[in-house]
Image (tube, rainbow, N blue to C red; front, side):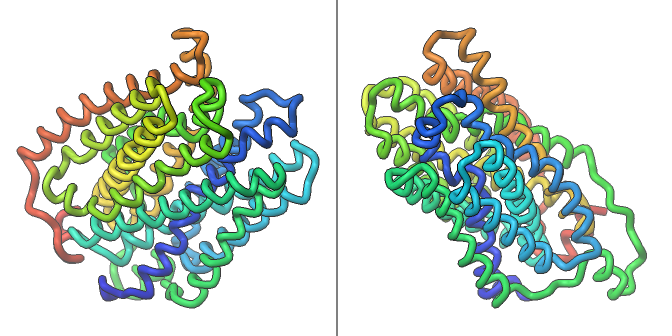
Length: 404
């Protein structure tokens, strides 16, 4: 397969815009909470947290299914789950029923999260993989920005209208059907090439990357789940501005994605630490912002942080195992991401309450402390690895040799 196949890239990017679909309605959480006034803030946040739990269950299954079913077939099924689970809640009035449909959305997001990254690993290698992974993260952030921006305005027309933001998946469905090749499942592809059968095995490195993303997202979802409440409680702006503050981080993520490949080439293994320290700066800016403008600045810097951390972890994961094990390794890493996302309100709320009565402000301070600790560890690890870094991998043969 040619690394520069533009149609394949377009299909991958179209799927990537759905990867953060779980937070698509975050801008409307405050409005939804006003409608379901008898439901607690933590329960309203479950609209974002519950799909993350489902993703944890789905991703290992998809990591195995791709060995016998083509990725194109699985991705189309995932997009359909995204559409039904995302849009149908607009027609419902029961909060419990909405949660059930949000679980189906989680199935769809879990599928696209695993396979969109697996597609990059399957078609691109070496520096080109880092470049495309960064661009993929940009596409992911564009999708998040569009959904967060549009859902915030849809919410002004009605709490249920917010859910129509998930119709964006129609674009993905059309482009995947049109441009994504029906690649053979991994197991069948290996057999077709006459290669001896290999067991799919994870490594300690893969588990380490998954653990890193789990811990990161315990603090990483604070912006999506607390921003609306923070802006409202501190009277920093309107509900629409709170939605914009949540959305702007995606713009920062998109911009960083465009230059991530260059950053990674220079910083190498220290790139992850840079992303984590950007997260510290972002959260402290938000927590101590006297006005909405600084909140916006903190949000866009946080976008830089998320892109750097996500791309670094996914590239590291794909390089930590043999090619046949990449989809499974990515699925486990995605499990870590979504377990952290689910745990976020259940860990952050009690910790922030212990720190101060201003829970929404100290949620960001807690996140900054968490990122700082991770950043110091990542910096030490990165510097050590850079001093012993092997020659860069630039081809399929080189990558296979590197993994032996």
